[in-house]
Image (cartoon, helix red, strand yellow):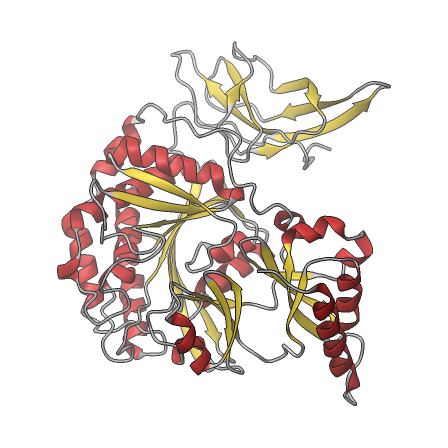
Length: 550
C-alpha cells in the first residue's frame, strides 16, 4: 500500500493539534499509529525511546506514541500512519480478513482500517468485538498496556533458523510414552466437553467446563489451580486451569502444553459445542498430562487450559504477562488449537512459529516424524495473533501453534455443527503424540546419570588492532552420582541444535571456550557420562551474553 508522506504529515499534525487543544490536554497525550518495521533503522535513539510497540504485523507494527513525537517521527521519513488520535478507553482488535466480502460486515459493525491484505484494525468504542462481529471472524485483542522490544521488530522477515533441528534417534522412553496416548480417552474427553452445550466465556456452562477440567487434572494426582482473571472492564470473570508436573533437576525451568477450552458459534450463548475448536486441543492437553504424570522430568511441565481465547486471547495474555512479570523461565510453549479435522491427504498439519521460535518448531516437526509418523509443515510468520501462542511471543518466549491448518478450512468452524461426529480421531491421536513427544523431549525424562546442574557462564571480548575475539568460561556443579566426565555442547541458536565441542569427557567442572567470533551469541549446555557409557540429559541452557558467573 503506497502512502503519501505529505498527506501523512498533515494528518499527524492535525491529530497533534486536536490532541493538545482540549483544556485537560498535555504533552503526554498519545496517538495510535502504524509504523513500517524497516523505518526503525532510520531513527536516532532519542526518538526510538518514545515509541511503545504494542502489536507486530507482517512488515509493520502498531505503536502508541506521544502526540508531540508523532510529527517528529514523520519528519524523519519514517513510515508512519496515524490510526486514532485518541485511543484511550477503546478496545482495538486485529481481525483476519479472508476475502473482499468480509469488509462490508466489518464496516457495518464499527470503525475499520485496513492494515495489510489480510488484517484489519477494528473497534467500536470499548465494546467487545466478539459480541459485535459475525462468529466466522478470527480476532485478537490489541493490548495497549504491553511494550514489545523494538529490536525484535526491525527485521520481521528474518524467519529462517540458522540450521534445521536434526531428526534424532528415537528415545525409547519417549517412544513408550507416545504410544500410551489413547484415542478412546481423547474421544471421551471431547464428548464430555461437547456435552456442556456451550463453553462460551461469560456463560455458567463455560465455568462448569473449567471445573470439569480442574477435576480431571486433580484426578491424575497433579497439583492444579484456578488462575482467575476478568476482562471487558471487569464485566466478565473466568478462569484458566493450570496443572503442574514439577521437575526434579531444575524445576524453575518450565515447558508449557496448552490449549483454550472456551468455544463460540452462531448461537454462542446456548449452543457452541466446539468439538474441534477447541475441544480437540483441550482434550490433548489433558491426555498428555495423564500419560506424563507418572514420569519424572528434569524440568517442570505445566498443562494449561485457557479461557476467553475466542474473545481476543484474554486468558493467555493474562497468564503470559504474569509469567513475564515474575521472571518465569519458560523453555517453550506448545499450543494446540483445532487438531482433529484434516483437510488434505496424506495427512499433514501446520506448525506456526516466529523467528524466535524456530528451534522449538523444528523440534516439533522432528518429533512428529519420529514418534507419530506425521508430516508437519512449518508456517514461518512475523505475526499470527489468532491463538494462545501469541501473547507468549509478545512476552519474549518461544512458542508455537500446532493446528490442522493455519487458515481454518473446516466447514463447521465457529458453528453449532462443530461436533464430535465430524472429527477424525486418528488424526487427533497423531498430533497429540507429536505434542507429547516434543514436550517430553524439552522437559527431559530424568536419566541415569542425572543432568548436570548449576551451570553458570561469563564471557569477555578481547580486542586487538586487527580482530575482536570472544572468550567464554563455563562452570557447573559436580554430579552427585558417579560419572567419568562431562561434555560441552554449543549452539548459535537458542534451544539448539547443539554441537558437541569436547570430543572426550572432561574430568573437571570448568571449561573455557576460546577464539570465538565476537559478533556471534553462543548458547551452551553440559551433559554427564558415567562408566557404562550412558550420557545424561542436557543441563539448563546458558547464553554467553548473560553472565551468571561472578
